[in-house]
Length: 222
Image 1 (tube, rainbow, N blue to C red):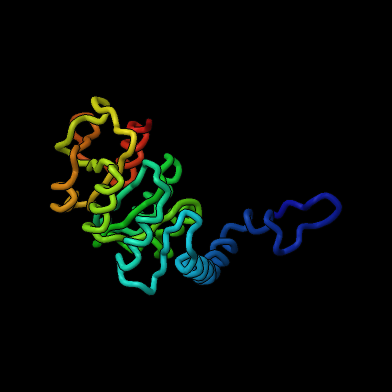
Image 2 (image 1 turned 180 degrees about the horizontal axis):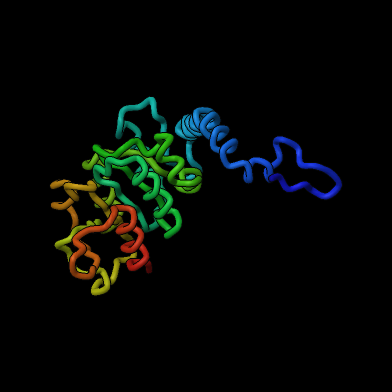
């Protein structure tokens, strides 16, 4: 049953008609999904070609990390970097971009092995966050050189770390989260000056990487 607006019957394309006609709406959504995905991919491609107002270049045509040095060295000199170390699922990668944005990260930096953070699924999961802060790829050596030159501490999220509630974050911090199964890479773990863990109730030994990052970023806020 459709809901008529004041002054006349609802048009076949009205929101009320589509929302209440469940079967028809489901069919239309199935038909529209490819178009929506294509539109998202076009927006993402355009965004990759942009020079972000913070100076991060994100162009998909380049190999992973090709723009890393330029992007890193033109970032605002502020704290709050979120580093994705071989996060494989694009949905997780996009959610991490959204989480970093919500919790004040200056940028999200993807290391090799991480899903394309401009993948359509990642862009959808980020819900527009890609357009608010720089999100781009870099190699581990480039990132570590940048952090050292700018005196930004690198911490890693790991189950064997120090409970986050027992730590006080430095003023300038890059927090790295690792692969969904294997955790942080050896290069990042070796370079990190602190491992951070989330105290959890017995019987639970891990959390989704985006959930864990959100909790850690919140707990480590200045």
